[in-house]
Length: 383
Image (cartoon, rainbow, N blue to C red; front, side):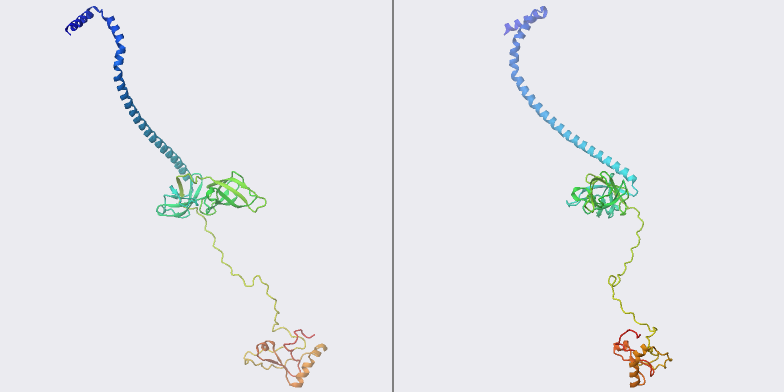
């Protein structure tokens, strides 16, 4: 060891002063380099395995973090898009609100009604917000529906497409009036009872007419999409597509008052129906008046006195002498005159009216005067 130490020190001194071992050093380094790399392989392998696993775990952490940031960013983006859409919708509602002739209130749609067969939605406004039954609900494009039920904090709105909903409308092009009815799940409207030759074309805009006193006149309702004119039918079929966003709105406007309409005229009093108004009554015989002159040869019955006893005929003074009757009249009254002269000094003729009721009454006539005809005889006057 001492010898080799002395040799090393000698080589160091020679190399530092003479620079003669540089070539030897390079040759030795070149020859020993493979041996050095082979000796370092286990260490490098261990370091590489450790670096691999550490890098893998860090990369997984980075991927998870990036994914979480992506989800948050996408959620924020969706919220931003939703808020942008709501802001745009609110701006349109505010613009429409400025053009409305009545006061309106903004309401949010909470959820749909539980009945799947009906077309209804629930709003976050109720009686605490002065919402009453019958108020119309609109958006920036047109009519949506009408408030049909009210609760303290919520209200139910029946959409136009509901089967039980109807609204009076008119065509914007020519003013033709009609009534639009909902078609249920189809989501369309139908103009019923229109004439087959009515001037309705595909693409016509249907607006409210204001005749019902609920919806203001001029609000957009629907657009005509189908017209079926049948020459053999009494009415034509007209299908319309609602213009308002009936199923895709989150905010709506509630019109807080209905249009001012003049008072309706008072109803006419019902007229009592007349009896036998449509039946033909038989024509009765016109009774003879008391002042009607009697037939020739007949003696008029004397009227009872005002103070006479009931059931008795007062004695009348003898009538003034009359001219002689014709031969026909005398012939007709001759038997009666002979009987009156032979049987009694005066003849008594029963009246028709008292005889029907069972009361016997007679008119006194002077002797020798012609007697009145009997009630059962013919009503024809003597010729």
